Image (cartoon, rainbow, N blue to C red; front, side):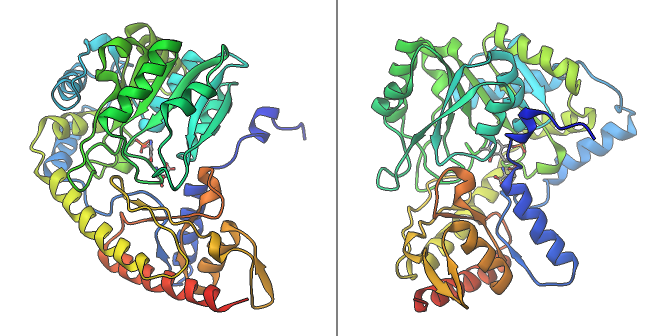
Length: 400
Ligand code: PMP
Ligand code: GLU
């Protein structure tokens, strides 16, 4: 058989999906696995959104739509960006895609040349570096430390930029750390963006899930860099619609149209039925969204309190999104059952094999010896998961 492409051999499989799949397979074989892997709200999609989809099917709205998205959904997105984010777009500046992941992929294909560099702050969402590599560009990782609450500074960003830099991927609230940048911090980053002329891909998919009075601020609302910012969002997280596969972006027309060209040759439009549902979601009452955010806060408070009782673990309490990202350094290098637990991969495997708890190793997010636990699952699963996590940590604690 002929070999596979060099490119695909350099791309990692998504570890969030891989660990979720492993947990699912164990569950299907009858093992009671607590899965805190995928960032997937356990709530049902709100009923009025489901009704819109059913109605779309009944009306035979089941064919191709405009590549860029339906006029109704695009109008709803224009309005949402203006009212929620102080971002002012015209319809040709919007592109609807099959998930925010797809939006980011389209943009990268549209803006990157071979050899371009794209700055990514670590810990990062698993897919950013791989999407950059798929566009023949080079991810340049800037580390945000635990002590800096997992946020990079304007100086760090400035130092990472050179003449090859095309873009910076910015994600606040962050997956996996839950860090949320303040308006002031964002304005400092924006000064660097203005000075260097690079693009910013601002992934705002967790904007609705923020805690403790923290406010989400869109970097694209800063006038000086408005045309350089591509704002990405989607319905997966806010509306519990992960399976519907619908994301969108707003950008300078030239960028949005270039991304649309990529999409026109790869997938065509996002699913017609999902577009109708998303339109109703974006236009409709936000009560469900607020209730879900309130429930995430309850779970966060519970999980943070549980974790604080574990000796040796370091945790930065998340201000947004729905993940915990504890530093597990203290537990690395211990010998358990004759085996050295050398790093986060070994810890994740140990938790899965011995405690039947599925989590994602931090290395997949560019942070060795951390683990990511999602609390987007039910409270019951979270309680079970935290019990098992504490037991696993206790075993490691007592090992030598
Ligand atoms: N960005 C971030 C930071 C995410 O965590 C996710 C995970 N779903 C996505 C984008 C992609 O979301 P989707 O493709 O489901 O819209
Ligand atoms: N974004 C979610 C996560 O990080 C879903 C899985 C994925 O798309 O990576 O768990």
